[in-house]
Amino acid sequence: MNTFLRSTLLSILLAASGCTQTTQDLSDSFTLAIAGPQNNQISKQQIEEIPYASILVQKKDTPPALLVLAWVEGNSDSISKPAYMKWLSANKELFVTQSGRIVKTVNLPEKNLDRIESELPDPLTLGLNKNTTPKDWSFLISWSPDYHEQYPATSHFEVKQVEPRKLISGTRNLLHVVEYVSIPLINQELVNNYWLDPKSGEVVTSIQTPAPNMPSFTLTTAKPYINKEGDSL
Image (cartoon, rainbow, N blue to C red):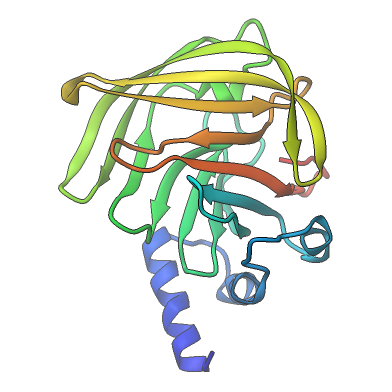
């Protein structure tokens, strides 16, 4: 890829996602995303060899794609406003997550989730492995095209049981949580599934539908992010 095109793509991503990291840092991650494995047989060894946090994202029955963590925005230890984790694909698609939830997408075909807003902490952030965590949540959701802005939505979480889940790193026993999302103004309901680490409450893998009439995506932690204090996210 020539320097001009690469710089242009970086500028587009910076503008689209409000990046606060240095251009050099993003450039390094972007180069890795372009050159990294993007095929049907992403191996555990390939993931371990990449010096960046990464996730596997799979749309319906398509092959999984490996996305690298391009940058972290905010305080990863905050409960009221957890950090935005911004994951970049080789096709310049961007997924933004908070506490394992997809809260924004960029450059997906047809539709994108623009944002999720709430004054209340997400139960996924508080830890749905805890009995004291609220099982209901309200938020505003916006998606495009067609200017769907700030539709009120509610979530109800049902905590199921610990069950084995096969991952690229091996089989793990994870706590299954089902989220039922209701958007009354358009009479829409969505269902998301999360599998959490039973001890930490961290989302390890999930199947999410980000917004109405969007496809579902399976997100799985490939290589966890390690913050400065040495804690994995």
